[in-house]
Image (cartoon, rainbow, N blue to C red; front, side, top):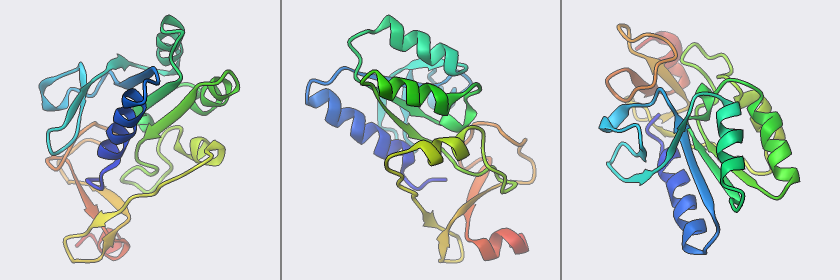
Length: 170
């Protein structure tokens, strides 16, 4: 949605790594934007090396393979299948903090993937907004007419809109 979700996530990863806290950064395997499957990259080009996963089972395996990890940071969490929220609660119970970035709603307005349950289980939620082309605050992402639903993408596939523009398709 171009509101700084990934930038905020990478800032937190930098903070924890700078403090010497073992941190695992994960993105969805389908995210091949910016030419790399091996980094989480912001729209402005800031990148950090990461691991890729297809579902929550892959994330759990990555965490088990890195037993010193104390923080798992997940970008574009809305694309992950499986019980992400349940795994996050389990991870929390064994001393692993889970930080996620993702869209809470699809462009159709429905809850996106595991986000509803993640929001319910979260200790802290930061809902970011950006500007709509009309100048109001954008609360929703709208898929452009020729872009398929549910695809990872940037401004070539999606735009951020306020509720008025969302409903009037302006």
